[in-house]
Image 1 (cartoon, one colour):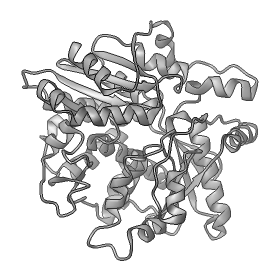
Image 2 (cartoon, helix red, strand yellow; image 1 turned 90 degrees about the vertical axis):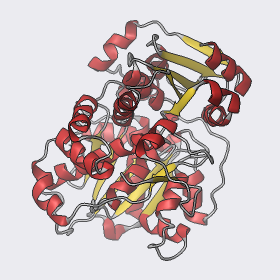
Image 3 (cartoon, helix red, strand yellow; image 1 turned 90 degrees about the horizontal axis):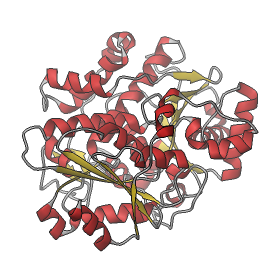
Image 4 (tube, one colour; image 1 turned 120 degrees about the vertical axis):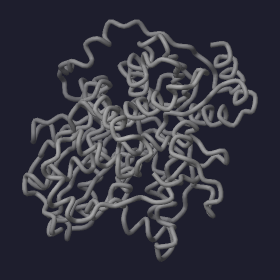
Length: 452
């Protein structure tokens, strides 16, 4: 990969290597690392090579293209095979609408892709170090579970997962706090934004920086984004092989992405930069409507977090907004950043009532159960198509970000039934939770980090 820069370094003055960006997580100026250049595939790749690729081989090809020799081929191939060892199938609701099931990994959420690849990268970069690496992560639910599963048992690495008390589902909490060993669960008496603020404050604290080797596992880490790029290509391959799209671009392709901290959406935008023929993206949010307000007004104003039934998206100040801005404010992009973003992205705020209605309608009409986050994405897609009737025949793909079982406390009363437990959940049912509890105060977190 070419040199990476902070989103706040507009002149690209201080660049770092991919290893440094992965291991630091956050840039020294508080910005997020972004590549100076995103390579792209030519048209022959999509028409000739892509259709015959198995998912791990496809993921390796995308990663190798992005990293451009940063990691030896054999090492990268081994990491990909260890990390991306479960499928991402499309489920077709009808001929024009499908969901990309990203919940077949160990934590039953899309974040397994990024967390497992990041774990392999960090373990690789940490292999010759004689000082323990501490990973600090804030989560609104699924990130913490995926990070805990991905990093559990890796030597020389300890992980602290901060999550908001009472604002994750019981099963999500079990997935975060049920590991022990090198995984430390920290319950914070606040919301996700409090957790994220604590993480950022810890990274900028001089005392901690002198005593602890730090990095982050949130979606702010560039390695997470790279793995999330993989499955956009996998979705296109499946659509191509079923004749729903063609390399001629005759059929329009739209991705609807349930969005919280906007890392998943940013990965899709990176995929398009690499040549993936996507016509439009839709960011579906819940009542935390900071981004839809921006799309409609041009004003980005962080707001206090609102609790919803799609809790993994309860984010009032999405960090990856900086990366999205950077993609659309480059030298080769004409017009204002806001207008450029609006031309490529639609965004809708979906209420809990609308989310429940979407779940019920699809369950009755297709006998297909959506989790609340995927329902937000589907409702947003349907809203966009209603407003843009000329795109009625576009292929719409919704990213199914979590298994419904993770949110059975919402779904079982709504449906009046008991959900079957997937095999990944069976072992977690008998694990004892182990967690620390703190107020959202940096000094308390510092004591915990230095004590452990």
